[in-house]
Length: 164
Image (cartoon, rainbow, N blue to C red; front, side):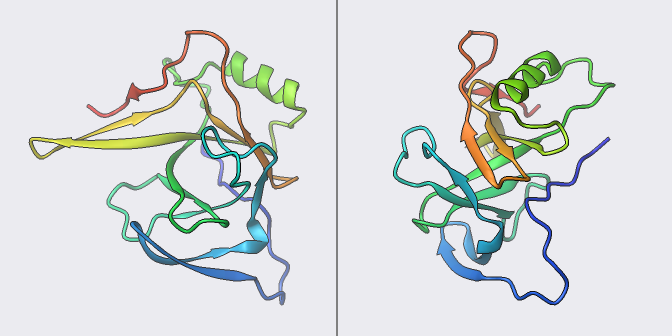
């Protein structure tokens, strides 16, 4: 079961407020009406608090999304939306831990969006993909608010290889 990531639905007839961005990912627009506010910013970037989730321009990797800073065009993160499946025998993050985080942050499962910050390395023409499962980004889609939650145990990795 996949859940479509919807931060805020636009009302029919309303014009959206877009901002043009040009950075290492290319040229694209972000919809400021779907802005996500991070009260504490992200780890290492406390000054940047407004982000938009968008498609990666000219993406070779499908399924990944770009978390783009509204405050600084150069600040953007490739993320992997995390979906929970009842069939998943080896989830990247255990459902019990996700339920506990949702309860702690008072986010309903219907409004919960989880993103894992991803990074890529290329060696000998082979691309390796890593995600941060220790500090996922948690978004309350209804409130358009998010935070980077850090698990306080060693169960999850900062750099988990997910490519084969």
